Image 1 (cartoon, helix red, strand yellow):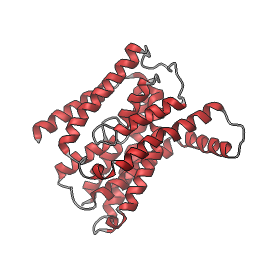
Image 2 (spheres, one colour):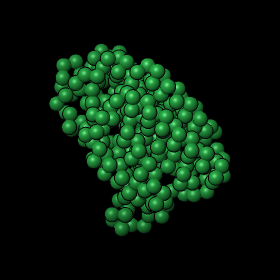
Image 3 (cartoon, one colour):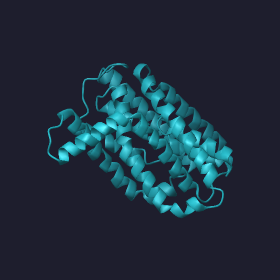
Image 4 (cartoon, rainbow, N blue to C red):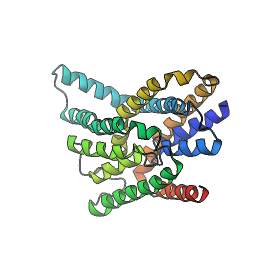
Length: 274
């Protein structure tokens, strides 16, 4: 793999990990187009995912620091704000479903799910999920775009959104798309749902990325991996930061339609190309 190809893959990972269009789906598609489905691909993608995930640590460092302080306060039985305690529990308990299903479906995720035809189908299914969630939020719950929302993140809503995160184990669905949709169904505003989606993804992204790295650690030392991996990782991190900032600001005043339409167009092109 050349450094140029690695930069392309890093850009794709950083741009699509947080925007609701599916990073794993796009990596599978781009790898197929570039003819990069070679041994070590999973290891390379795992490093890119970790690099992009580090953008979350930088962007949400204040939120993460508060969560760590809250966790320490709970463990040491200090007084902590109920809101911060609830958010911590919502994230921890909301992470459990994805961990359980991720371990159960691990073999399928690395074989059956890495299929371009399946990605095309799930891109459409994910678009339907996002459209219905958006319609339910705006038309049924009457939460307009740009509003603060009338429900706070609770433990039960966190667990509910956590089950939506499980759907994203299938490439093409999109982790952010599924969890934002879950948040909208739970009555959160788009901005609140997106912010919680990012915080909820932290344990799963880092846990899954580190586990995958351990599983395929020997492949990281294949010839030609070093320099491309460095360029790809730097690209994924920088583009990831830009993507997080873009999505949070965009969804303050816009709906999900542009992402829904993009996903459908990509799926149609894939189905015609296959």
